[in-house]
Amino acid sequence: MIVMFDKLKTTNKKYLKMNILFLLLILANIFLMIGLYNHYSQIGIKIDLDVLDKLSTFIATISILGYISLKLPKLREQGSSLYDMGYLVIICIIGLMSSYFDEMIDTPVLFGSYLDMFRVLCVVLIFVLLSMNLKPFKEIMNGKFTRKNQIVCFIIFALIGIFASRYHILINDAPANIRCLVVMISGLFGGPFVGVPVGIIAGAYRFTLGGVTALPCAISTVISGIVGSLFFIWNDKKFPKASVGIILMFLFTGFEMFLIFFLTPPDISFPFIGQIYPYMLFASVIGMILFTIVIKEYKAKMDAESKEELEIEDIEVKLKEYDEKIEELENEIKELKNE
Image 1: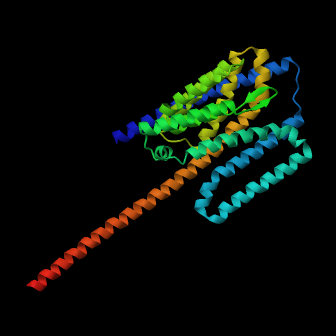
Image 2: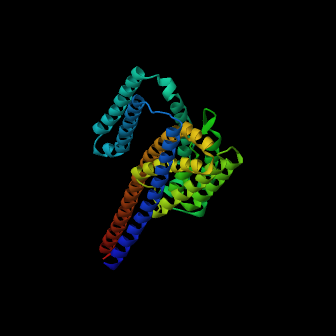
């Protein structure tokens, strides 16, 4: 009873730490929004309500797609018909969304940069997902954290983090990338021995690229590795739930923009944030959704394979026992014949 109470107490402390970190990120996002509101109010920019209506429709559609996508693995367990129906619903929603926006707005103008950002996300995620097939990554997913596994994961994530800094799109000469997403995933996946050094290397590389936002971008990269590692530790060395990962990435992208707002002059920071924030937020959240789905699928597949191997081993043990019993019976029969 005392042991159970101690475990419960430890778990509550971990959740408290998570909530405190979430609160700090929320505060950073609030300060960012206040700063943006004050800036755009002073320069007399008014927000078109029609644009807000279209934007809210787009966000609601993406949210529904994300929710259904996250539930698909569970639907598959309940029956193939429900699983197939989920994909049909997604296809229908995408079709309706495309028709709606084609009629209401100039789709290439509004969504061209988002599609480019999605292309960047897909290319970077391909490298991450290919790495998941390596033995060290598989062993880490099974909870085997050896020094060799962590070094291999650190090297691969560091290279992908550097690549994510170089591979970006330009929004009015402002580079938008998913470097912090890669570093965050490295911390959530491999823990502090992977996430922290990956954050330092990717952050240092970003700083060497220069530019007025080099310092805040480098700092936010290092912090993303630390934050991902802390959540890894507090979540008992497991990749967090989809909802936790998505909220964390959503808030951290705002925190990254807050650092740019805090560490650069207003005449530079506000135009920069206004140009890249929506695209980086879009790519970071979608990227976390996709990675969470894939890692759950990988884990389910590996669990099924492990279960199958255990069943085979169990059958082999039983067959061996039967062979021994048969051998004993044969020996007894021989002894009876000799008598």
